[in-house]
Image 1: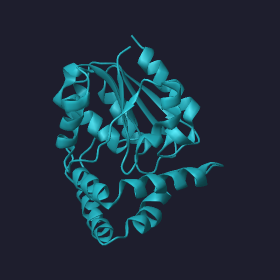
Image 2: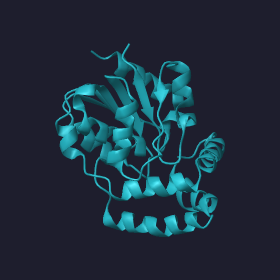
Image 3: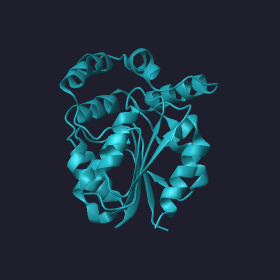
Image 4: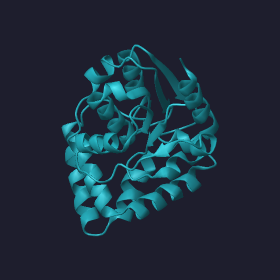
Length: 228
């Protein structure tokens, strides 16, 4: 089977994909925390990856995955883009990151995650509290330097719509119905751009369907991996 690389979202680690790793034990999660541009992050993934691989990324991980596809389309066997955004960062959003970066730089990572980011992640549901606690644990373990590098990378990320138009491999576009950060219409756009894509909307999920609706998300990934 083609190796599968999973790229987690901002301030997340392998725990974001824990249910999927249990079902797909050969999957490898690669960190995206050592550089402050999307281009450099993608280059780092390519330097460590096998010659050819399947690639799935959620949120910021999806943004890096699209750049990997742009840089080395011949090495990506198939791609799954989960709860992500193909467009460059809007100037207003880029500017709004500066106060967050300043707060985190002086020790306020946890308040920024708790008050400004965490509330946007999940839909309502019985596991919301536990998943939000896990998000806080992942962020605390990664620390402020990773938050700042990732924020800088997102501020200057390139638009990838042309990359998706040129994608010729099997693609899965998946998102939670209630994702407030990367709404459904962004995923409809990606699906329309990619000629060999499947669109899957996960009900009763927000920005993190890998944890909110793990069985359905895993099943969609398995179908994508098995597609000819």
